[in-house]
Length: 326
Image (cartoon, rainbow, N blue to C red; front, side, top):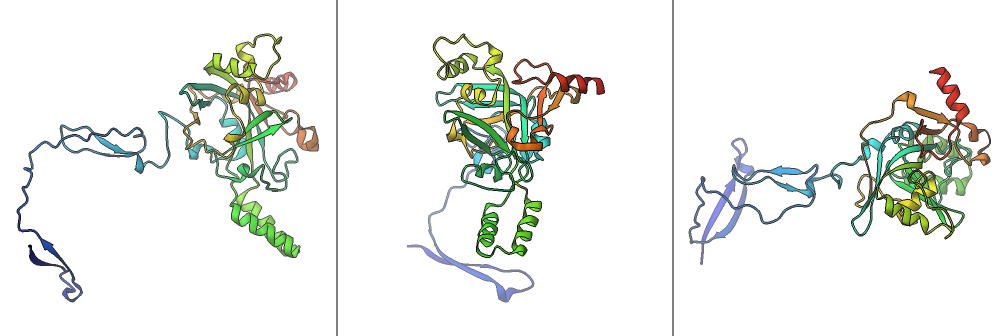
C-alpha cells in the first residue's frame, strides 16, 4: 500500500489556474547518492561523435556524445550541404582540388582528386539533360537538393557521374505546374511555370570528368581491366580516371549511386583537398562531346587544372590565349 499525496503546481499571480497531479507514493525511502560520489562511466561508445552534443558526467568521466543530435552523418572530414549549395559554375570550379571517396563493401577506400569538371546549367543550356526545365525519371536527381548524385548510363555499358548544384527545384510544385499545363494549356499557366523556374532553378548539375588517383590504385586498375580487352596494355596511373566513364569504372560507380546524397551517404562522399588551385591554374574551355547543343557546345563551361596529366582533353589553344591574357 502507499500513501496518497497531492502535488499542486501554481504561480503567484494566478493560483486558480494551478494544475494538480496525484499519484501513489511508496512508503519505502529511496537512498540518495551523495553529491560527491563518482558515477560510473557509460558502457557504450558511440561510433559517430562528429557534430554531436557532448555531455560530461563529472570531472573523472569521459565526455559522452550522442549521434542523434548530429544533423549529418560525417566521416573524419567531409564536405557538407553548405559546400554544394552554390551556383553550378561556381560549384564546378570549387570541385577542382577536392577529394572524391568511395568506401567499398569490404572497407577499402578509393580516393581521387578532382581535376576536371563541366557545368550543365539546365534551362536554356541545350547540352543539358534538363534543358527547358524538363524533368524525367532519368534526370530527377538534377532537381534534388545540392550535393545529390546524378548517375546515368551511356552506350548501354558506361556510366557518368554528376552532382546537383544550387538550382534546386521543389518536385511536388513542379509536377503540379506540369499537370496544370497539360489540362489547360493556357498562356497564364505557362507564365506561372516560367516564373517558378526563375525562382527555383532549372535543375543544374556538375559532371565530374577526371580524377587524379590518390588511394587504392591497384584496385582501380583491376576494376578498369574488367572493361578492357585482354590484350590491352597495362594502364598507367594517370590513365585510370582520365575521363567521366573511366573514373566511374575505377571507383566502381554504377546506376545504384543515382540520387545518393554526398553530404550524408556512408559509402561515397567528398573531402576537402589540401590546397585549392589558384585562379591562374584553372583553364576554362568548351565542353567535350556536346556538339548536339548548337551554340551551347562552344560555351566555356569546362574547367580543369592546368598542367595536370590526368585531364582528359587539353585545349592548348585556349591555354595559350589565357596564358597571354594573364
